[in-house]
Every structure is written in structure tokens, then in C-alpha cells.
Image 1: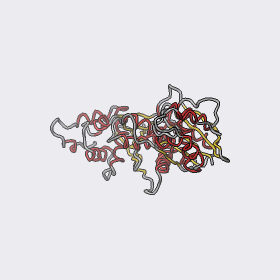
Image 2: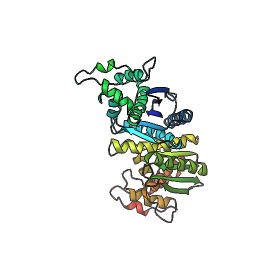
Image 3: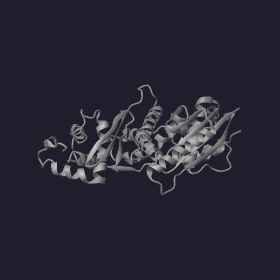
Image 4: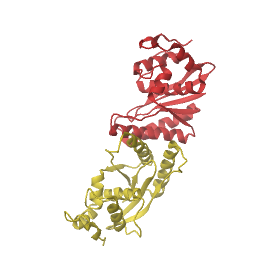
Length: 182
Length: 182
């Protein structure tokens, strides 16, 4: 099972593809798309869309996962985010892929075991879960991998158990660091 | 000069193409795109994008015009609107067309002569300006034609003069109805 996670943004769109085989998650690829600073807003959208379309064709995932957005700082940032998210969902629909959505708290709970985890915690946990050499950065990349892993957990159940086992007891917010994938 | 106006919406996207030749505006085509009610949100976006891409290829306009959005009822409706607007701008960028934006008040002032005109006034004025048999409806169609005409006015200057001449005096909000194109 292969999931392609997207964290859309008009400035930078993070993406990450994760495969589950056996009892492990494997990183297929990850990165971020950013249009040149001189590009107009429609050109930026074209850049995001074309980039994601090419990546989806390359990865051939079973599904695309994105974060559900209900909140934004304000109407203006919601509009900008909506534009980028629109072309991302379009790329998925054009590739004939189903799109699944998860709330930010669900994603953090699935990955870190705590729904209000901070971004560095998510980044660190993604690194551990996928056995990466370096922390996925910028955070858009980690967020894209996180939503993909969240859907793998929801679909396979296996790793969710592991996470639950290793979840930090209440009041020891830092003990998530102790978790090491077997 | 041929302008393609778009009024994007996730439920229904209005479009209208207007050509300026000689001293007159001519309606090339107009209508609205609505995905089947059973379609998922990404499928809706695909429907809007594919529809607009086909129409732009058919019309071969010089430019795409859309309303600038700064406000929305709330963050949630701004997000939904942003998605639809994103795929509309993408279709324009993919067709290699420049995109111009006008504020709602600018559009109303250009078409009706009054920046706070109501939707029925805009619809009626579009009908008169383009010599249409029927009032463009639903209002998304009229709004798409309005932004196209607004850009024609801004580019050619000619009709803006006519409008100014026929503008309703202050306090007589309904006298816009008296205007008839020569």
C-alpha cells in the first residue's frame, strides 16, 4: 500500500510518498515544490499542479492524503491556501486517485501519539518512523509525510498499535522521543 | 479584443466571453459549469477545470478576468471559494493567458455606474450592454460577463465614457434602468 501525502501552500507545497510493506513503512520520496519568487500567482498554481501531476505519475500511489482545513489565520490566508489546495486536489482527481482527509489533531495523534504535538516533534517522529538520516525539513515535507503515515495507520492498524504502546504517559510530554522503531 | 470572464464557485462557476469590435461589445458565449450533485469535491474541481480549459481553447481570448476576493462570509467559505478559484486561475495559466483582477466595486461601477449596485441591476445592465434577449441568469453568469466588460472598459475606455454619461444621478438609484445602448 502506497500513500502520497500533500501539504499544500501557495509559497511552498510539501509532498511525501510512503509505502507499507511487511510490517514497516518505507519512504518512497519526499520534497517540496516552490515556484520562482518572480512567478505570478496563477503561474505558482501551475507550478504546483504540474509538479504534483508528474510526481503522482511517477509514484503511482493507491491514494492521496491531505490535511482537512477548517481554520486559517484569517479569510485572506484561507483564500490563498484554498487556491493551492484546489490545484493539489485537482491533480489527485485527474490521476483518478481517491483523496482522504484527516484533521490536524488526528494526524498528530497517529504520528506522535499526542494531538497537540509541536511541529519539531512531528518532524523528529517522522524521521524515526521512516528511518531517515536527517529530519525532514522544511516542516511542509514532514507534514505531508505525517498525513500519509496517518492514513497508513488508519488503513493497516499495525503501526497505530505500536504508537499506542509507546505513547507518552500524560504529563511527560517529551517521552515521545524515547520511541524507536524496531 | 476578446475577454473571458470567470466567476468561480465550488457549486457553480459562471463564465462569459465578450468581444469588443468597432464601438460595440458582442457576446461570444456565456454559461455556467456545475458538477453533478453526487460528485466528490475533487471531482467538482476537475469538472470546473476541464470545462474552463475547453472553453478557453474554443474562445481563444486575449485575457482572463476575475473578481478580486478579499472578503468571504467566513474562513470556511473562503477556503471552498479558494479551491474553485485556484483551478480557474490554473486553467488560465495553462492556456498561457494573462489574468486581470478587479474589485467588486470597480466591476459594478464600470457596468452599472454605481459601486454598490445590487445583483439584479448588474444582470439587467449586462443584458442591455450586450443586447441579449434575456437577462443572464443565474447571477454567476452575469458576474462573469460583468468582470469581462469591466476589463474591456478599462482597456478601451470607450464604453466607460458612455456609462459615465448615463450614470444615475445621486439619490435616483433606479434610473440606471433608463440606459439603452445605442
